[in-house]
Image (cartoon, rainbow, N blue to C red; front, top):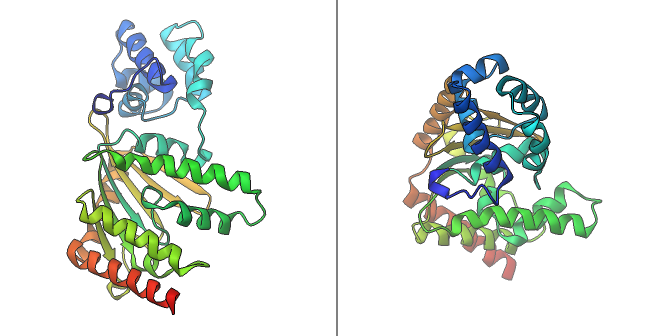
Length: 278
């Protein structure tokens, strides 16, 4: 995408998207016209071309037939589909890396983009009790690679609503959660991210069902991702994205202000540090 300077020579997905745009335009078809026989929207085709969506093999076969590309997309979609993330999250993670704006609601855990190494390790170990250490190391490495997205000074804009449960759910070490909360506070104080805490006192709310991630792009339609235990769905349907955006807006309206949220995060971190020393 334009805002991220994708290099087709180094990104299989970018190459595939660029070739799809060339082949489609050569055939004189609009995105909507190509999407019709695939039973997808024109915006979905735009996301394939922009690299925010993965091209699956069945789509590749049909595109080769429709655009008469002599098997090019079938031959190349395998390389573009490879991912270091679980299948249910791969497309969302890859779209996240191209987003200009990310808004996220986290009901239970600190979001991956904000996790420290120690916190990520504790989370992965809790979910993979019998996994060898090498597996945990790889999971942690991949998560920290995602978090490097925030090393950019301004892009993407990251706005997160943390349920108060995120602050209160401790693991084996209070020090690990305290460190993780201090890390979030530093990012807030450096004006890199916006964080609001949704307090328990807010009661029941519109996102009781799980986590939400909203992603906006410079030259592709917005996406929404909802996640459950070992599952996740990526939506591009405008009505669904609009509904999830409204849900997120309602969360921010019921959450503490950014200033009060920062004060609470630092206060809870201080409490954990005190208890750990005691």
